[in-house]
Length: 182
Length: 115
Image (cartoon, rainbow over all chains, first blue to last red):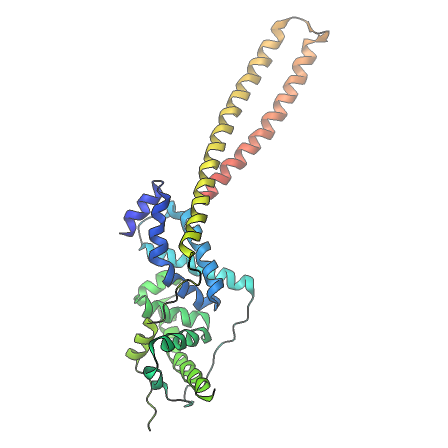
């Protein structure tokens, strides 16, 4: 389906590009938030990524999935913005054995509270860990596909994923503890 | 009560719910506005490049023609020696060719960058 729209855009049908905006905006913003940790900055990042993708769409060679090609543009733009912002994202390093709250409490929360808590927990993680978790679980990409999107090695992704899961458990516990105390 | 950690499956299920929507409601329209502006810019750049090239070729041809025809007018034109006139014209011609060629090259490289 993507290929048909790529051809349409290349042939001069600008409006056909709306398909990509509708199709990829939500996940692109989620991925960008993983890096820049702010929804509004992420929105700007994704907007710039769409413009860059439009400019370069004639260079898309159909060798990879359009989504992988586009997410790579999003990530490049997000990391470029992060560097520009020079925002210090403090790495979340909790003791994994620290039992500060019952993690399974999250399952008893209402749907919107769960979503909020998970997004906040993902914001606490370092950019690469949060990114790998979202690509692996949200987009359900394989390790190979994550490697194609990020440009990292498969081993590095496996290690990051393992570390990210552990940190995610710790982040959820920490947030649950905070909400229980308040 | 024992504290139960989340299983990987439960964690996966929770992360699947973490899709973030665009904060602005008119995000799609905003992006499409910029895309259309970009397409318009690319189109006008192509047109400008074409027009510039046509005028450059016309100017070059006209310059060659004039420098070829000038000596045929006689020894003097309006009291000025034709040889001097041709020399002045040729100097102006070369300067114009070089500067305009640079502009044309810049315009085409901008067009290539945009593509």
